[in-house]
Length: 380
Ligand code: OSB
Ligand code: MG
Image 1 (tube, helix red, strand yellow):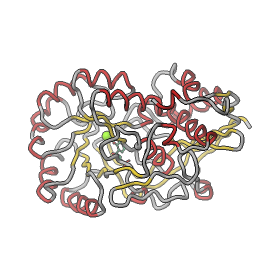
Image 2 (tube, rainbow, N blue to C red):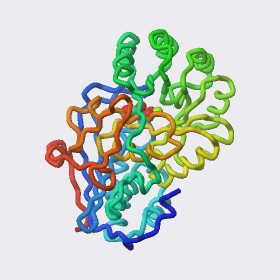
Image 3 (cartoon, rainbow, N blue to C red):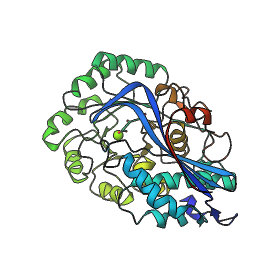
Image 4 (cartoon, rainbow, N blue to C red):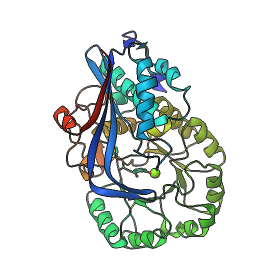
């Protein structure tokens, strides 16, 4: 883990002030998964400041606990009342020094990740390095796929066609009971050779084993999170009964979950979302553990704005991110992004943003101002 071994050439970084904003960003088209439909993104944005430099992160929790058990009101409360008062005015030599303030609190992984990710960005800017370098990654671009929300079979086949033509390296189809085998069969008929995956977002139980087994003949790269969001054990039972590799998303909140899952063969591919696991340090531990188990990882997405996308892309440059991630072009989701730079995939490759150190992007402050629901300052 490279971040752990880095020295502290500039001494401690004092967090002079912080800003917590809530913004609303409409989605160009609604995005439907097995748990419901999203029409807009409400995004908590965190800025940490030190000595004239700023680190940024966005929260990936939803307004209500439908993907996981985190939600924006709880996140805002934890940041406002607990985490930011502890961090502002304090000094940290590196992210490891910050971590003990975050880990004692139960849950709230996505909230803790916001503070840690913004600190990582700030730390990289203090050191004048791209974030990927601090994380131990390398390379100028990453492979990306797309995640296609639930729609009619005919419409989905056309969306698959369009994204295959754009060069995306893997197509992921959202599925749910009643919208699975026929969909995959239709897509496979038209595209026999593409890299294909499916994501159920916890919509099935072991009672659906027959349906999930019926996906075996379609040569799907993996089936993502078929069973309950807080289950590991049943996934191991299911994996024994189906050929398609299981990829775990929702059920993994940290490296201990990943170790247990891999020890019982509950998954053979791992989706890493920095928010879901509480930050980069935990993401790197998971990355390294999976490498030791010879298990591939890839970087998931949460319909992030350019800030979260930039973070995801830097993380995806680590060596064991050997399957295409979900960080597709921002223009697929938003008419206008929160950042100035355009994060657009070309032939299924997303360039690492390197317009300056850290996450390598700059905020579109005028636009952010127009979509701000609330803004709070801490310190300074
Ligand atoms: O399970 O990966 C998921 C979006 C919202 C909630 C959960 C998931 C997703 C995606 C989005 O699949 C992928 C993206 O950011 O483009
Ligand atoms: Mg998923």
